[in-house]
Length: 275
Image: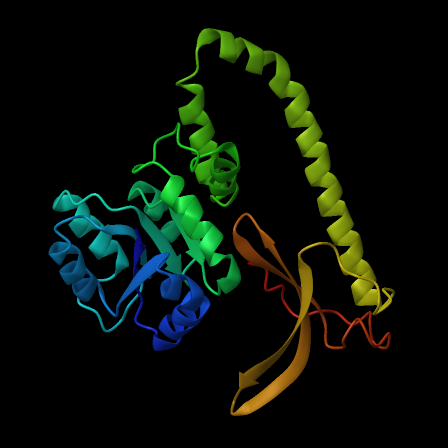
């Protein structure tokens, strides 16, 4: 018996790619694939599926021309009590969409562009998963939870710690009381080393002392900007950029590319554009 998949996506190119990828599987009868260009079209297919033969729904989130988008489709199915395993395939892989997908009992969240040849193994993984997600599900494992927490803003992380501590048993609190002071001190030292390394790198970049072939600290890059003013374009100006606590940070380096020139490296920078 064929595995019936319902893909919901408003991009025709994505539909063509799926047809090409699963040409062999559909020809052999292993898969039966249905395409819908909107949530409302998908809902029609699902409501006609009285025998519940659709095994898996794979839906995009944002479909501008549709009356019903991906999340609205998922919620509509929940309200109608239609059990259907669901996977999200979306270009909008931000943390807000990711956490919302978990709340909506989505089994997998796949971010575009996807490795089309790996899609079959992901489909097989989703088909093996339970209908819904709980804290005991294989989906919500420690790695997933860590990823979610690490991408939270600092204040939310702090609030989460307080909330979790309030739910711990006495024996676990006693263990934390013994272990946390050392762990906190170690982490403070690690954070300070990172700050010192970045400050040293910024100073060397401004002095033109870093070889252009030398890689920057992990996750850091140099951006060249031109600033428009009074109908003219001024620059280039060079900035060090890096991600920290979920935000893109900026530090001004000077008017000359620190990777190419050592001249005028000691010029005073304009006001910092730190974010």
